[in-house]
Image (tube, rainbow, N blue to C red; front, side):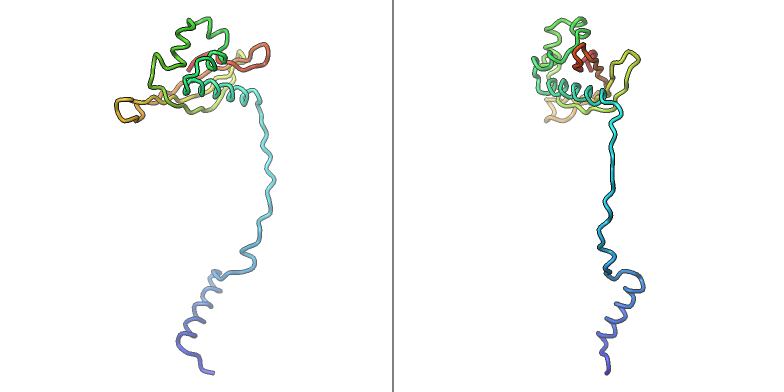
Length: 154
């Protein structure tokens, strides 16, 4: 039986695919074994302090004075007048504050936790473009009831 030119070409291509390992095989589609991954939380206080810091920063972004004030430690309340704290949270002193990103945490020698944050401020006159971002930190402390509160403002 004589083979035609297209059939010969097809045989050559299939042979090359087999030689190069490009042909589909039943082994290629095997399901990989499932890996067992264990995530260990090494410092629960960091997780809880992060959550409280995010709660405060959300109040700052949303200009929710009452929520923000409820998350302040006595240490901060002693440093500032209440109207100044309200102005900080509500944006009265800086109406451009807009968003934040939260970073790594470190435990300080006194047990408080300092967390890196980046605060974004908008230029209202320039079509809502980010004017600048400020790197800062927010420091959290645990009160007598075990609740994490802001002890240093960003």
